[in-house]
Length: 255
Length: 160
Image 1 (tube, rainbow over the protein chains, first blue to last red):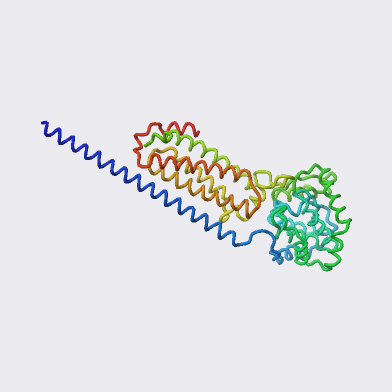
Image 2: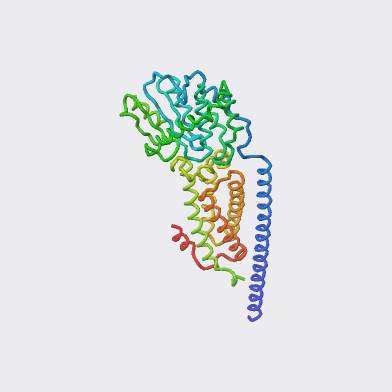
């Protein structure tokens, strides 16, 4: 009897010991695996950062993108100052924007092409860009350059190409070199005239006028849209038009 | 062994709590980015817009905040179980999230040159979770789940 009990006791002890060894093993393995994962993670992060820092990412480069697609979007559409579309069109859509504003760029890339293709090209509406200087000091030379390009019928080409090549706001990418590269890409016919006019006081005054106008409308962000047509009482504010669908609704109502 | 460590139940509850906050932050970023938020550049601000509009904000067309939501959900789940799979899985997810956060913060500061306070708060939460899950793994790896008091139900109640 006592012999049997002792045997059982020893057996239990042996099992407990085995389990303890097993647990310790598992613990060691898990901790080793964890340490390995930490080293792997450090290596991955270091590699990612090294790879990224070797490719220059700041907006300083002057190689322009999408020159051809902007040209295609606007080709053949009447253009005067910062207005595109048939001057006889009854509905007038106005965008108050800042060339440095990334959301304006998103609109220009994702929302406005559809409006331009469907509504402006067909002669239904005119589309106007008015500078609303809100992001920073660099927005002013950018806007002045657009106004001067507008004097030669290339205003929207300038604006659209700018957005396609926009850098990070207030990062210093708005240099004379960058401004000129956009003008060349937008095919402003007389660059000397453009260069003179963008530095004239009248260009600055134009920006001040449209910015003040937007402020008087109570707008506090860009892009903000406004519309005028037979169906509206003077200029009606649309706020930020979110999607092409909503802008189109507003156009229908303004007819 | 566990004398120097907080009780696992306590760790699990804190992990669940921080993970829930993380889900909230990442969900907010996702919604704001998908256009539900204020899609306008306001004078003075703009850091978040710049970050969200940068080419780094999406991987293969998927907003990185969505990866964040998944990570936090996995961490929340890991807090409900007292076994080695949950201890190690939680640690691995938090480690990945922490490494990714380090990389993203580097991008914000040196590449995008704009700071988004929402992204920073997510990075801070991920760092806290990394420390918590590491403490949990070091303190309790190999420990028997049943020996640990504190039921998953309590953690669940807190999370809800």
